[in-house]
Length: 284
Image (cartoon, rainbow, N blue to C red):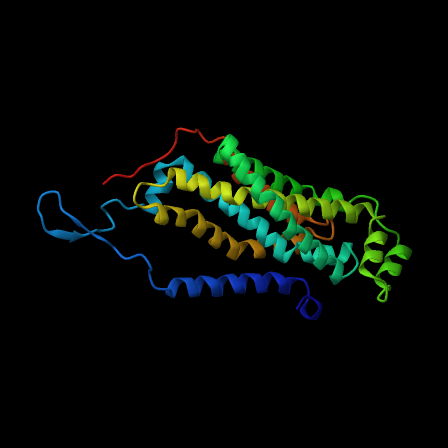
């Protein structure tokens, strides 16, 4: 799509896919069956209503700094994953000299997630979910923010670039050895892998923090709030990143990564500054 219609098509494809997913989710049937319980004033069973012990999303946002911070952090995380899908492959294709090397980088980032997830779980057990979520977010967001700096390092000269791009018969290992002489390529790969480690560490911690602060009896409903905010962000994030790429990408390569990283850091700072005592239990 990018080769045929240009870089902007990648952002439109991601947004279209997110809208299709949102539409499908909206028509799925409810899987949680409401239970019947005894009324305290009579022996007859009655159906549980939404007001009995429900987690109203608007009320959660209005009364709890925890859930506002969780929603903001999840929104920032969605910016990071939108950047991974819509921006990083395009930059990788240009910096690494081909789609094969770009695909290898994304695969390495996926493998790095196998390191970040257990580290996030360990940090959650040792220091708490709030600290783990903040640390993971700041690591991933900071890595993306530094992408323009990494791309500004002295890169390959045109002769080396042409040789690498024209080495169709060369093995992938030989191409990677050649690319290792490029500071900008090395820095970009390291930053992408650091983002993946931080993002995979933050994910479980955010879930744990939500479970710890969910209203009793409405855990599933409450946990759906940050997820819904993240999905909503994921619809518009590719368009926002694409806009900055069109306007400033030629002047500041990788500026969209900085925008995404800043959003992640904003949500992570919100969690870091969160008062530990600000949790909510909604009782009706």
